[in-house]
Image (cartoon, rainbow, N blue to C red):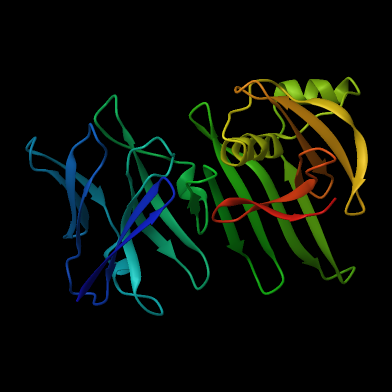
Length: 286
């Protein structure tokens, strides 16, 4: 039988079609968006067929039929999910699967062209997870029993940008693990760093914007300015002040290990900000 499952998570809607048997023809019908068509997706003769019945048009996408046979259980063949967080459902089609890593062909809905457009960057990401609450794409790539990498991406000016990457590998010669971590900085942030001025990497700045929107119900209205340095939970932190669009000023503390805190002042205290399925305040730490 074909199993159809629906999930609603924050602003993200995901619909998965899973084929339990190789000889089945799974199908999926979904509405792309409020001002976009309703589409039906099927697999026939090595093609993913997308039909817009109202406008009498069809798209065909090549599909490797060998992927229909489940590997170690039921397998999601395609899904409708907002992958670039623009309010439109996009199409994700299974491209390849190993014992640990899964890759997808990703087709983003282009509202101006009224059609799907393949994204070459998303298809390179192993095991992508789309976080609608934080508008982030995360990835974990299994390389071997000792090696792996993980990364986080954001859409910046329409381009998928890697904000952070961490790789773990084992060196047989030294018999030690090697960890390499990379963070993305904008040109203005690099200029500040080269000038000897404090700067926040783009991933942290994006987390601060998301936290302000969720926890303080307001968007950030200015670039942060360093207020001072301190110790929070035994960690060196930089206290950054941000003007909010509601007229208030928020203080976020940034630790070197990436931890982020919201400082509400001496009377209300300082709290660890937790980023999971939702953005929440953890326990008071000061």
